[in-house]
Amino acid sequence: MVSTMNKKLLSIHRSAGSHWVGDGFPVQTLFSYTTLGAAFSPFLLLDYAGPAEFPQTNQRLGVSEHPHRGFETVTVVYAGEVEHRDSSGGGGSIGPGDVQWMTAASGVVHEEFHGHNFARQGGFLEMVQLWVNLPASDKMSAPHYQSILNSQIPVVHLPDGCGSVRVIAGEFAGVKGPAQTFTPVHVWDLRLTNNQPFELNVPENYTTVLVVLKGVVHMHNAESVINTAEVGLFERTGSVLCFDRAENVSALLLCGEPIEESIVGSGPFVMNTAEEIRQAMVDYQSGRMGHLP
Ligand code: MN
Image (cartoon, helix red, strand yellow):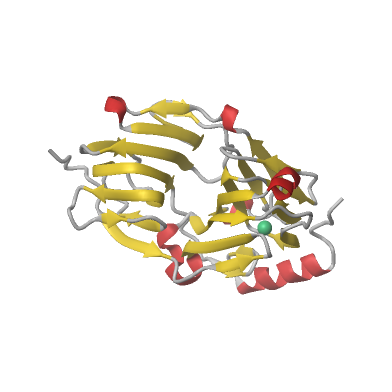
């Protein structure tokens, strides 16, 4: 039986190809505001890196000093290790299961590299970087950095052995995630292992996005199949996601209150107007976003 509150799948998105971010991150951009506009708001972009195997090296692989302004970057590591330093004093190394939630807001300069130990040993790297927009009123707030370890992220087990939900941000089944967010969002890291129909309750009127990283998800409608490295966008009405089956799936479920404001972006800056983008470039070039320590 399918609930009348069934949230219908609107569209499926995938990357046209892959590209390198610096020399460390081979990514597929699974969705981006640059082509899809406000449909995914408050989520702007999602890059999926790997899984890719790197040989051991003494080199620093990654992306060197660059700025961001106007949004938050959320990095979820599944395999390997990522090191970060930024001009607000934030920094650290995150490994499998860990999350880095960086609020660029008024501006930071940062670098992102493979972790030292991972680089020396080599191995598989797999991670996601999600960009979450900020409302205009918070775009020029002070930058902020949250390092969230795997051990701090609560796990909720789904009934009937359907799998589990790691609550990174927001709340699931009354359990709150550790990330502090400006925009109301839920970020759930799902493991789904069920060949029977099951349901997940999600907020009405939020943008709802299912990012399938591994496995294949069959939604209630027989034609609604979301494959590995694909993203399903659901309609905003309705409050139940009806799954037919999902076997050995790793996925991120993103729910967020849409920000009904214009989006103007260029490279590492996402603001509301072209003038604000020009100002961001001037501020970066004149050193007003700070420098790495
Ligand atoms: Mn960056």
